[in-house]
Image (cartoon, rainbow, N blue to C red; front, side, top):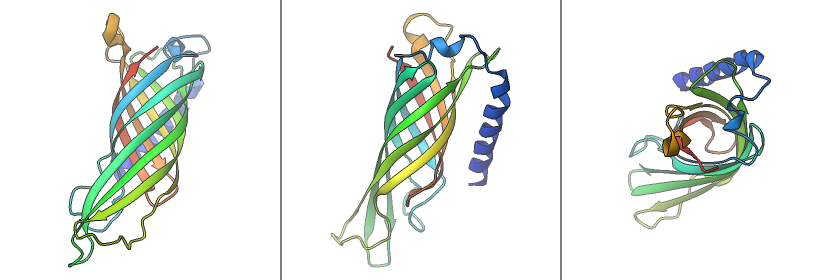
Length: 201
């Protein structure tokens, strides 16, 4: 938890320290120009465990997102993430399986960084709904406190352009790292994702 918080703070400091160096001309705006489209496949981690002493490891989210640029450097998009974990609730309760689908919409701003090659920064926020379900191997009804609900998650992230000097197909790929802080609901806390992004257009 402390490490995740330090990473998030460091990213905030980095973003705001480079704002003064933001380029006024067009550099990476060509990548993120109006009409551009991107898709991302991603895996994540959470700082929370929603039940006590989980039987399996803490939730390991997977998901995908789509982004469309309504203006240079400003994208809007949709995302869905899926979490699953198992736990024993009580000695005679049997094994429970918990699932959370998190569809959301987001807005994102990509910063133009003067003199910086191979890396880009972005910030934004997700607004979505966590759809929770629980099932029991004994067929029992879930009696716990977890439930579906809205979530709001500001985020910071970076794009790494490992292949931008290659020609053709491969220069369309980016590595995307993101840290988010969900501030509401039963599934709130620090988290992050690592993904591979592909530029469609």
